[in-house]
Amino acid sequence: MLTITKTPKCYVGGKFIRSESGAVYPVHDASGGFLANIPSCSRKDLRNAVEAAAKAGPGWAARSPYNRAQILYRLGEMLESRADEMAAALACGEQRASAGSGPGAADEVRASIGRIVHFAGWADKYEQVLGSVNPVASPHFNFTVTEPMGIVAVLAPEEAPLLALLTLILPAITSGNAVVALASESRPDAAILLGEILAVSDLPGGVVNLLTGSREGLIDTFATHEHLRAVTASATRAEATTLQQGAAESVKRVVLHDPATDWLAADHESPWPIRDFVEAKTVWHPIGA
Image (cartoon, rainbow, N blue to C red):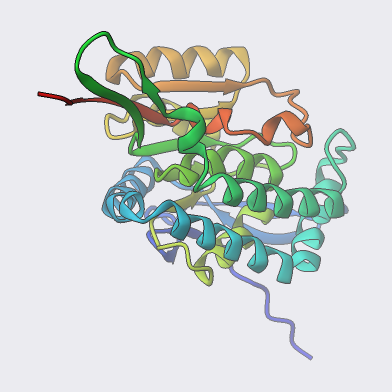
């Protein structure tokens, strides 16, 4: 019986794409056997993904918080329905990396589902925590509300390639932003499968765009692209310097995580990561005569 091997593709604008250059890099199993050619995305692919996010972002931001919550819950359901397949993909990556420092495959999938559900729960509640009614010494009603920033860049670490990727993406999309994410370079299996799950979820195409390829080759563009309003990354000191210096040119927000971050830790589940990807708008409304 002939086994048909899956052709990995990136997920951009609700569609599955190969790199525009046709470049790929091979992924092997633990014994060195060839598994697949992974798209090696170029700077043009990144720019195309930003354009897709720019088209999808306003519609996503305009949805009600309750609707965004329901869509995220549905995404958690879709991941749960393919939990065994995702765990197998993660386990394959663990064997190649001989890691042992990150969570086990099954634990990572369970934690990822839980994290999606957690942020789904915050989608229609974070405004009550991050917004405020402000006392002022004048005849005005003064209040502060939050608004999404726009397009957020995500650079996932090599470890916990599913859980870390989702932990970085979820705070941004919960508050109505769109995302362009670069998956783990050495363990892209989970991100490839996540793209397939996103495609059949209710999340509009273009809200989350997943790229694969060389982190070194794309990090400068992530840092300097003027339409990216924030970047969040698990970064080494050298990468952090590159991101901060590049971001200074376009005045984008930079949120950095240590490569040794424990992605299973409970402190990732709070409204405070959402605060990193919103802007505050203060409104004055006159009252009285």
